[in-house]
Image (cartoon, rainbow, N blue to C red; front, side, top):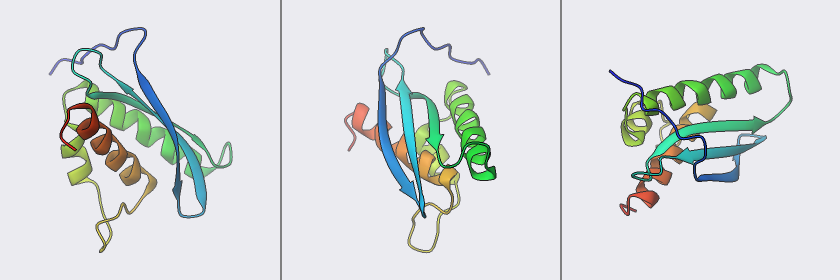
Length: 109
């Protein structure tokens, strides 16, 4: 499997999300060629906290999966959801946001 390289400059969307009592800022970068999501960054909550480390590490893993060709929808489908089909973790929320962004950019939603 080959990693899809990111251009130095690319379109990105940044927005605020809340998961539980915590507020985060998500930035999703997109490939210029097809508008699909290519990377995700997250900031927020208390610097140095376990939750911040988990969220940042989750964003790195999600970004790598995207760059190696895993679709945002596949990732979102595979992540744990609660009984109401909502994300069970901040990583699940990021995956759902990636899938929603991919649908917007590909005209599917």
